[in-house]
Structures are given as C-alpha cells and as structure tokens.
Length: 314
Image (cartoon, rainbow, N blue to C red; front, side, top):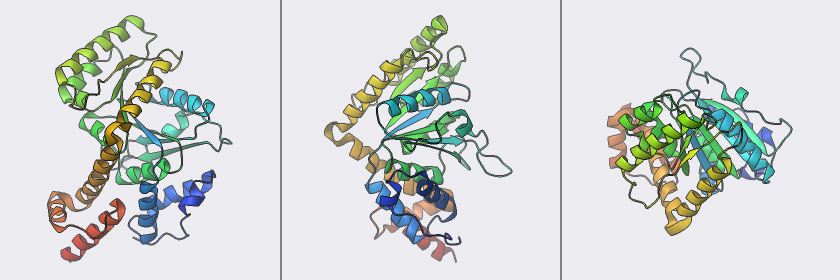
C-alpha cells in the first residue's frame, strides 16, 4: 500500500473545529491503512474518545435518515457538536457507497459543529467495514455526539455493536420487520428499539406490542438494562423527548460500574480480530490469537499481527 502523499493532521488540529483536517484524516483511512502515521493517529484518537456514539440500524426505508436529521438539529440546539457516519451498501462496480445517505441528511454546510460523511460497507453486507470502524474512532475523538447509521440486513446488524455505545434498532410498523427480527435473533442486540412513523397510530401500537412480546421471550441480556420500545415520529416530533430520555438513561447505565470502559475494551479487541479475519481468514485469525503482540493499543496490534502474518506467508 503506498504511503499517504501528504502529512496527516495531528489530533489537536482535528479537534480545533475545522472540517477540512477531519476530511483529510478520513480520506487517509481509505488510502494509507497500516502506515505508521495513521496507526499512531488512530490509537491516539482511541485513547481520546470522548463522544457518545449512537448506532442506528434497521432496514431501508424505515426512517433512519429522518430520525438522524432530527437528532442533529436537537444536538446543535443544545450546543453539542455532532458527526454523522452513514454506512451504505457498496456498489459492486466501484466499491463506493451506493445510496449516498449524505444527500438525505440536511445540514448547514457553514456549521462547523456538524460533519457528515458517507462510507461504503464494502465486504460486510450492511455492516461496518474496517475503514468505517476507524472513521468512528477518529470522529468520536473530535465531536460530542457521533451518529452511525447503517442499513441492517440480517445478522450484519451485529456490526453496529462494534462501535456504538447505544444501539438503536428502528422498526417500521405494518412491514413484518418485527417477525423477521424475532426469527433472526436480532432482539438480543439493541439497547433501544424505535417503532417509526408513530403517526400511523394503530399499526405502530400493534408493532410496539409485538416487539415488546419478542423482547420478553429473548430475556434481559443479563446486565439489568431493560430495553425500552418507543413509538416515534421524527416528522412530527412525537416520541423524540422519550427517545432522548432513553438514550440518557442508557448512558447513565453504562457509566455505572465501569460498564462503558469494559464495553469499549471489548470492542477494541473485536476490531483487531475482525480486521485480521477479513484480511487473512479464519485460519489467519487462529494463528494471530496464538501469537500475542508487543503492542497494546488496538491499531498498533492490528498492524503488528498483519506484518507477522504477511511475513510468514512468504
């Protein structure tokens, strides 16, 4: 992989509020992966991660972009900076983002407190590529709130848990989604469930009831958090206050007993494993697990393992 042609901005430069250095760093993630400078920047960002990371997942057309718009507006009204990473399915021809969610998210281009970026899922169905994971790590060191929006397709919904502090599953009423999610075991993943388009009163209430029933069958996950089911209309604003309250309650839950620190440490371990598995396969991951590393930070560990696996292949 060729080295990046221009110097990477320092983390202090990224946190200054200018959008251009952030865009440059995100571009480097896709062109300079594995270089020493990028590894150092990403590990510094991982240590400095201050943002609340909200992951929105669910099928196409459920209203995630409309909800994202509403959440961005509310965050800015509260004086919080916010970044949105919209992870789209990949074009088979160009490997780029296919839907271009950035076009559906309405922000003021002059507002330095909002940053929006689309990225392709690449080889991860509707989930998160390794580049997208690195992008979230970078953005959460710069902004107060990071919203990651993915197109959930079956088990790939689990990918959002690699980066999100709070996973939100969006379900559309009268679509059959709740039954499909029950079959797929997806109910074990979210921290909050949103039934969108609450202005469709009767069908949204029915869907919320079905989802609550599915949750009661799947158990509580063992960490004492009870997953709320919220009927919400991002268009009319109905349910937004209840949603923000639920997100706040989950953040408080994570703050107790070091849960968030434990969650992020687990995520970092999985980042390394997923990156090695994508590049070297299941056999390579098994060999990597047996190797151990000198490096203790996630991106340095990934680079060290990748270099050692590559050298033994030759």
